[in-house]
Length: 146
Image (cartoon, rainbow, N blue to C red; front, side):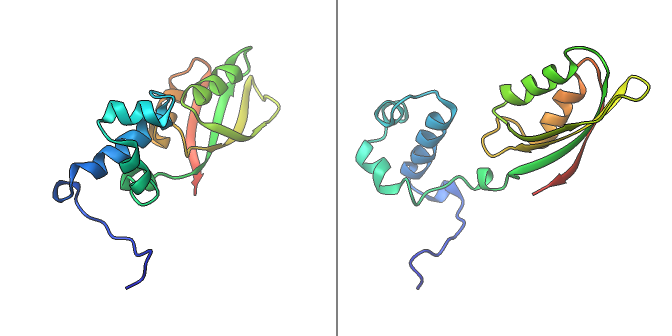
């Protein structure tokens, strides 16, 4: 049997310790705990148990998320609109890789943006919804996702 074989198992049949390891990782990722010791205490897990399993236990749902999203937007040519868009992405912990805004035509500028969503606190669909609700944003659509 290969040493690094991956299998998917429903969490209800596993000991609670594996869920606690994932919980510790989430606490650290979201900044709710600043140290491993603090996160382990919050999850009622010993540090030695965390270290034993941390490199072998992963949350399947977080592995499913896309990493890179390309968006197309139409924005009104008004001061602060692009800044508001950037602030939404930043507030969700998205990492903007590229921005290309064209010269406005009839007071509307087209924009493409590439975002690394690996650590983002929202799905790409949620991001599109939030961006489309911003003042001055006339259209947002996902044009590619890796």
